[in-house]
Image (cartoon, rainbow, N blue to C red; front, side, top):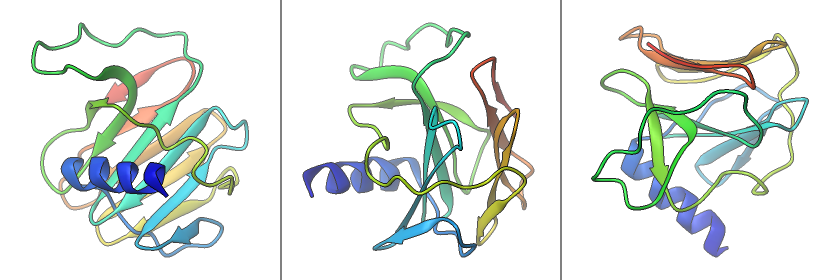
Length: 141
């Protein structure tokens, strides 16, 4: 329960989303899903998406001075602004084991995440901002 509360607090701070498409599993107001490879885990809540990654071949940008927690192991997008790297002391891994199959999407409000064989893409469809996350790269837009 403490992990779920910690994730909720981190997501609300980043602004997260609640999608409506099965196979994502709803836990309260947060929707969690994993990539089929289980290398990426995501949570959507209240207009935002957050995805964390276990193994990656890329490096995040340098940790900013304002971030005194873990840096660069995930990405987020919310109702405003571009996608960005996460600074947080928690993870969405292990909260739920539900898998979003390849070529399927989860959407809530203006935020949509699509699982591809190449990685996961989450976008705010109103602003056009979001991110793409895979083992090979992290791209913000």
